[in-house]
Image (cartoon, rainbow, N blue to C red):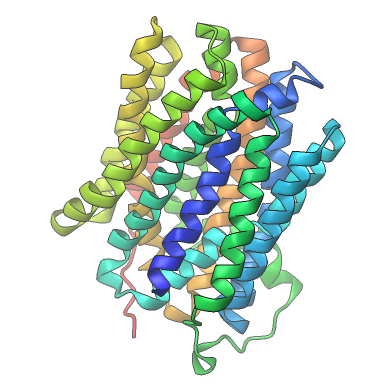
Length: 391
């Protein structure tokens, strides 16, 4: 039941994001037509999540997963509700900041899975976690597009708020604690240990994981840039609106869910996590080039399906490399650091995507993203991760 609830939690998280992705650029355009403003809105969430994620991860190591996960879910409900009632650009930013402060539940969910899963099965279960992400992408955009069409652009945010609140209530009654008192971290919490910048630097300097964290950074800068302004790209290139983007994101979600729920589980039985991640990054680099120069609207579906497959086999295997390289006591902290690195990319990525879109053209975030992902592939090739003996 515990693993099922965690997967449900991540599914609802991504469902909420999926509900908003097709409509956020159109909401922002009521106040500003700059692609950079859309990027700044995405950055505001990521900036505060960057500081919050390692704190939540460390607190979950110290006080247990359950209370921190429930807090995070409730914070998301508040953030979505504020987004729905926002009638100014400033309040839109406040809403995303609130969600960002409480938005470290992915790192807690990953630590929760590490608590209840044997090391050899972690990449497989991280793949299931990724599949829950993908399912949210399948259903979320379709629902968001429908709600915005019939009830206005704010309707998806209210729906997401209701789902997050319902999940908080459900978790209060059914979610068990997986971090027994005797396994909780006793090391005093200091500013240095909670400072995300120190955590990122520590991760980058890790004896065995430094190149992996650098690869996570490069890969996610490109991917977060794509997420933040893809609706603007399809609007500029093909004249698409929320409905067409909803259909495309649903296709992406279907491919992602199949890849991470089925294909990854088969691949990790035969190949090393590192080898799978390299293949995934290589596939993505090719797909990003295809996105930048795609000549016809129908082709974007095939290109993005290939891209989604690449992301689908990369994300869980990289998470598996990190998780299996650290001790049981450090799962929350290190996976929180992973989320901090990812959150940092959601600061840099949208800013770069918005700037390059405005100044270099709609395809610029994608051909430059291909370069970043190629660099990430080379970093993973150079890495020498070490399998930690877990107890």
